[in-house]
Length: 96
Length: 96
DNA sequence: CGACATTTTACCGATAAAGATAAGATGACT
DNA sequence: AGTCATCTTATCTTTATCGGTAAAATGTCG
Image (cartoon, rainbow over all chains, first blue to last red; front, side, top):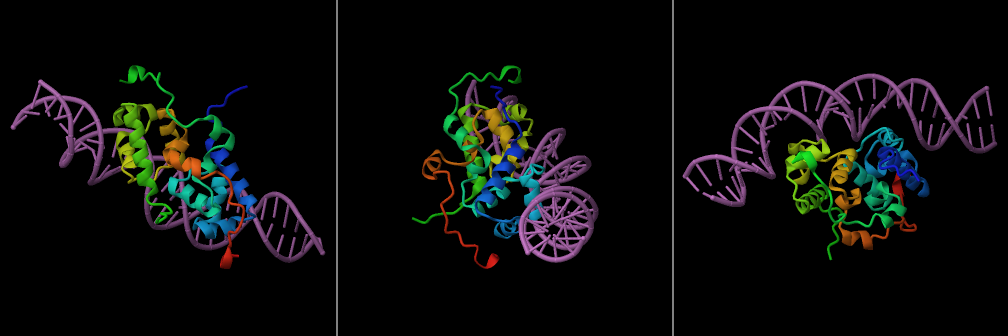
């Protein structure tokens, strides 16, 4: 069980985004008009080739009518990764 | 109950970020070294003056050891906003 | 008040996002 | 094969992020 810390954030977000768009039977053109983001830009984001800004992701999430979180995490994680600070034990070491 | 669709995303994220940093008693300098993001840049993000990229937020979340979701949403929302597509009823109207 | 730490703001240069457009690539279907 | 829709890639311009540095605020404490 090789726990990938962060396999490929942009690729994963892109995959989720594409899946969500497919669920609603939207073309890139349609989503582009709903979001105000150009279709080429959306394509780059969906293929994990672009590091989108927060407001850009927010526009997409809004158009797809899902919370932004949906774009970032697997529903699976959302359950396991409780949500709060892991108590303590984070040593700043030589940084301080 | 005036439902604000998106009051001020960047400001809200910044507030949450600052709160999380305060929880761990980190200065901007310290977080800067943990993340590789400059302290001025972090300041801009925390004050809602900068629209950070996804990987930038991810670096910050990783340094603070919280899931990215924590930066984006109130724990309150996370419960109410179920997580899935709202069935149907989204009319693309004149766009198609 | 005077040091000191922390944060904010203002510049700069390099890199990258995003819109527009156009050109390829891919696929489906007759 | 050809047409059509959809997606990808490329180019260009505008704009913004981001790191670096340095300077101004804003605390905070003795």
